[in-house]
Image 1 (cartoon, rainbow, N blue to C red):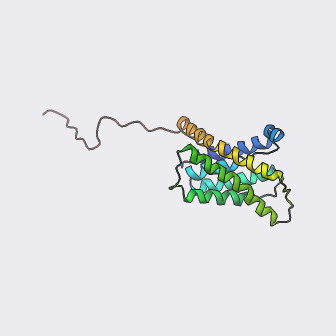
Image 2 (tube, rainbow, N blue to C red; image 1 turned 135 degrees about the vertical axis):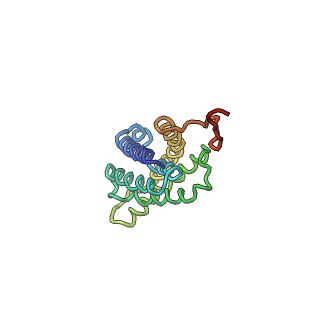
Image 3 (cartoon, rainbow, N blue to C red; image 1 turned 45 degrees about the vertical axis):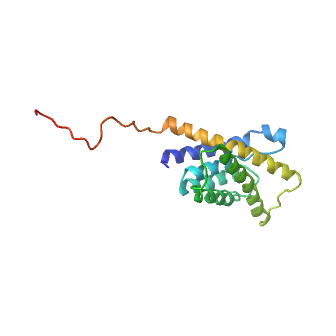
Length: 183
């Protein structure tokens, strides 16, 4: 993955976290603050390297925790573990299939809050857990599943638009001998 792709993913990560912390539309209607970061980690794990995945998990987790009620650093480990597992087994995953992207987005969006909850339970923090948390968990998983294919489309569009595209092959072969002069 090129530096441009890594920078583009980090910029989108920052914008997504800012957007999800300031946009209150779904929070008022459904009672859920959606988290789009696990679905972005799915894209990063399937398209980038370990360095890009680590940057997204650490920077995204810190930015998310700084704008939420979580203690700083709680979401880093679940995001990184989910992304690392997907990145290690990406040869077996059908990256270009929408249903596989949605299933991976659902899985990541469901496991990331559970991992954060496990870490919060083992600290001095007292998380608010009730039956309504099950509703929030289901909505977050559904939104993560629906948004994951969108990340693949957005970054493919950015890559096609802004990255250098090599020229197509010419009609001349590289091993062709060109004779010059009189014959």
